[in-house]
Length: 394
Ligand SMILES: *Cc1c(COP(=O)(O)O)cnc(C)c1O
Image 1 (cartoon, helix red, strand yellow):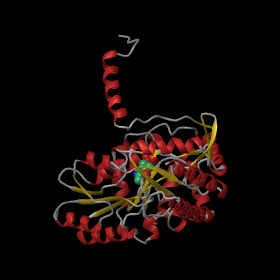
Image 2 (image 1 turned 60 degrees about the vertical axis):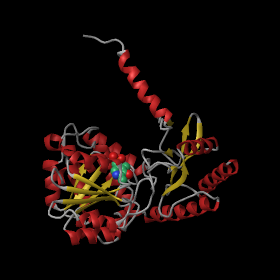
Image 3 (image 1 turned 30 degrees about the vertical axis):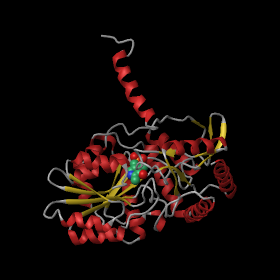
């Protein structure tokens, strides 16, 4: 049977759903960004300052990464051709895993195709029916989905509230338990109280998993993350990091004990049933780690300009919650206001996305400003000028 046109009945149903999304101010659409990923990008023919990528160190189009990827494509090919457990586990995957384990000071590490896969795979491997998982209220969607899919009892604790977490643990003795949190929260840029969480986990004999998506490459010795910065490696069961943000490529990894990694290889469905990372991506990550080690000044610049921009936006009267680092939430409140701000900034040559519910809690729609180490002082001045003009119009 051949269907030449979509069945009209289903489109009517889709349109109904879309209308509900529009009415709630939650309509989203994809932009078309021309040319390379950089501090300035071209949208609808206009050059605009990009203040909303997670390419924190400016590595995504760094020549060393591009050259490594091109060489790997020529040497190994573009695709790995199979999942890791079939014929897709190449020497460069194994070499990168060993390097990531050294980077994190763990026994072992294993690659995943994305951070989303890593979180879902690790959580569903570690807990299941009859177990309990404890998750910060503002954790990333991939953690939320991993918790739901695991079948474990899910306990959401108030954001960064270690005392509330301890209370919940006190009431769920005698079962296998996993605490899971972002180290740096993706939409707020603030940090989890990792020292307290690890102390509670040790006292209560619970496993701890830390998602370092936004800290990898940015925080800690050589960019190894907040767990390393705080010397908590021995207290953390599972360390997750991503390779598509500060490290400029794509993919993710889990680092921990050899037994943990072997268990993931045997049980994590999002590792087993998916094609291995492409060789050019793997080679680009290795090149990124070289740059991160060689050029600590990128991290220092990122920290410095992040503090400066926070201060200048606050001085203009914008509401910016406490925090540090390159994720700067500028709270608008309603979705409509956040969208209007985003449009106003784009007209002035600054590209920042409005982040709205359900990505963030109701009433906290915002602009999520993010900086890159390669933003210049002139770029910052341009951004501040655009925000100042926005302020005058309010
Ligand atoms: C981006 C992100 C992920 C997902 O990583 P991808 O590699 O983009 O799939 C997971 N956790 C957090 C906290 C993130 O910000």
